[in-house]
Length: 555
Figure 1 (cartoon, rainbow, N blue to C red):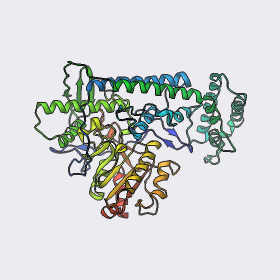
Figure 2: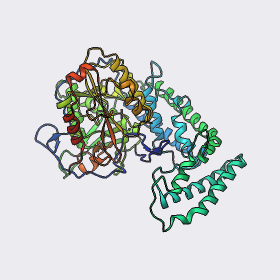
Figure 3: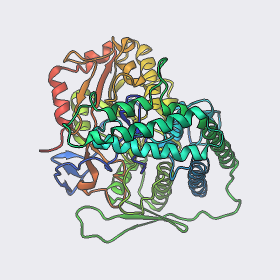
Figure 4: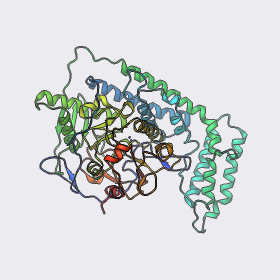
């Protein structure tokens, strides 16, 4: 599965940052970087480790034959989804007065559809459940979290006071927008303003206080309180505003359903000759292969030269045969369909240099994957794409365009997994991670004597996050393997690195300064195995420490 230029995190009940995808490089520190090196043959390397490894084999799933993706339909899909994003932004402005939609909210909505799987036998790959927001409250929660303002959770002192002052101004603005706002709500907003005015001077010249001591931090926390004894001002506002947010949900559901039906009904115009996909390498003085330009009709997509080489190698692994003109033309069409789909999905334009984000594609560094293959027998990824995979076999979001490059299908559509050892790096959204945890548990419980092992990478959001609580709880107790006494291995924030989600962009690729970033939050690693898996791939204390070392940025 893969995660968007919208970097603004959401905040959970305790105020912990919850991104809508896997972290990109936007807000994190860059690693101290060793350069990427280019041997005369094989994959590029960094610090002696290959950036991908398509050698070896892994038990594979049996996939049905798939029709070739229609490039004209991919262009139509891109146009319709871009229009849907614009319609969402307009609805957020019209209904809630937001200058821009909540960060990552539409991407979470798309991801949740993919995680729930097929809504029907024939389904639109990007919108398999277009009305899911009417039964799931994910999109609604994201919208309501902006009312009257989404506050940062960890600020204290002057910063917390500034948050309160801006919150009060936004709340006052909202009262002017709500025609039928209750007198009680108006009195509470006035009371907040009076409290701020009475306490503002205490922030000056005083000692630095902890979150527990800071009155402004306490006041911010009280705004979102929702207990039998206390209902915060934000909660009261959201009750008033919910009909407006529900209207946005209805607009999106209606529009998405219309687009899905339009795409399902699409047929290729009879008699129209298929245009060829042109592939051109641009001149460059930088090390490694040059940026690749794909042209189909009037559209141009730019791709990192390194990833163009990677995808060609990956395609050759799964499509043996003479590399003649027919093979090359087919490869280019399939490459274009693949790239166009993911660019449509993440809502970014790889032709715009400097774009950052793409959370859904971020991945652990190659040093981790090389270690996992050697020490834990891992040969397949459960959440990847041809663009960010390390191994030749993986599960991905869009098997209709990914299968030519090694995808074994969607993890959420899989009824069973072949025996083996798997890396699991889901998109960082609570709903997707919880569905992942439930499915992993089902696979482990039904595995019998077949060796099965999962090394799972998820953010350290605390056990109140449903998926983390589940994997650290009683249901998984017999499957967890951890040698230090806890439920998981913890890589501390700013002590480990990841690969950017837009590593395939033309201005990223082989540029190590844009490929890697230091992860600001902690990452939990759960090793989940049945008995046969634990015997075949034991996770010892020494391996636990070695894995953490492979995650560390170079010093």
